[in-house]
Image (cartoon, rainbow, N blue to C red; front, side, top):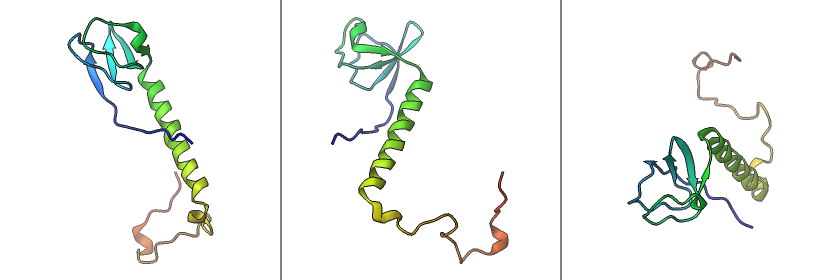
Length: 104
């Protein structure tokens, strides 16, 4: 089973003909945000190496990967949540007036 890997975001700024872009890197070209989908060696812009995207799209994509990763982990470790129900986790060492339990 392939596991998606969430790595740090590498935003290089404006596209540079002297830079190497690796898959997953981000750059700006002519005012558009792009994600590198194929390694790009130094040289002129090659649109087949990049995919236009948006910051919102990339954030949503990462949130989906994180959610899937958590779900997969819980599926692989079902014993880690056995017996945990709403209200079953308490912090008895905290004074009752030190925690705000008001719902917003």
